[in-house]
Image 1 (cartoon, rainbow, N blue to C red):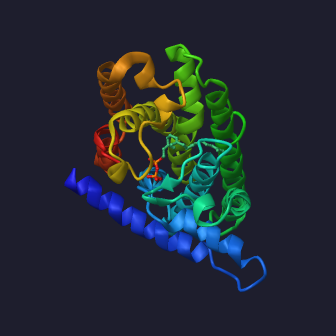
Image 2: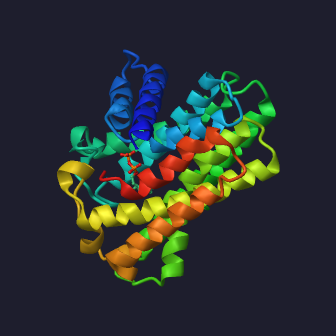
Image 3: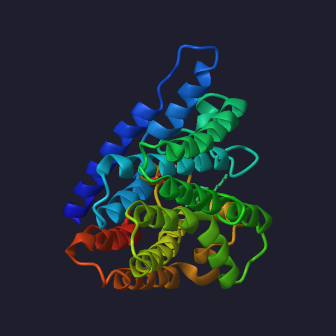
Length: 295
Ligand code: GRG
């Protein structure tokens, strides 16, 4: 676990450096917007999705700077989703990553705009030749990001989540919602690494299957942290899912079965990596980190 945490820390440092470069603050009338974008992106976070991009891309010997750009793009989308999710019209959370949410630090309108601009910035990054020399690969990345982040992925999942409050969804419907809301970006991270490396179909399928199980395991662990975690460790307000009547894995199956299911999914995720050699060891370790994490 120590090796994994060190690797996660190293990749987080590299991606923060890349995000810092990609988010300058022009001294213009709109500089407040750029400050809010930087605030949303640069303050903390595990940087798990960038880690998955970098380590999936490394399996196919992708140029590190290209992979870092894609890692930064996915983190921009993730951070935009957190900024919008924290707004009063969504989850209404004053704390994120252990400090005031973006709308508390700035104001609601600025937070909406910062989220919008981060989403757009992600596609700007992907479209540039520095991200990949082959325009077909860049187009493939753009299409993958759009599908995962949009109505058939993360935003669609958020819609179901909002509609499902106080509804007691069956576990299959919860799994579909969580797969869209959270799993889509986690799968995207691995799919994007494989696309950057022009991986063969069997390699792509294996990584995709790994990320699918990982995404669900991640969400169950997130539900458990929300129900049992400590605010100072998780950096946000715990107990919000139950208070809002959310349909979660923990609410549906109870904490013990949820924990067992998360471990099962984590083990299954690792099995999908069997066709990769030792180069996939950090991805294997990520599966156990995800279910045992405290934040
Ligand atoms: C509002 C467009 C829009 C989408 C919202 C992803 C999402 C959909 C909302 C985030 C709310 C949330 C807490 C979802 C549960 C899973 C999740 C994404 C947790 C946060 O991800 P971590 O743990 O966060 O990777 P850090 O801070 O480490 O990056």
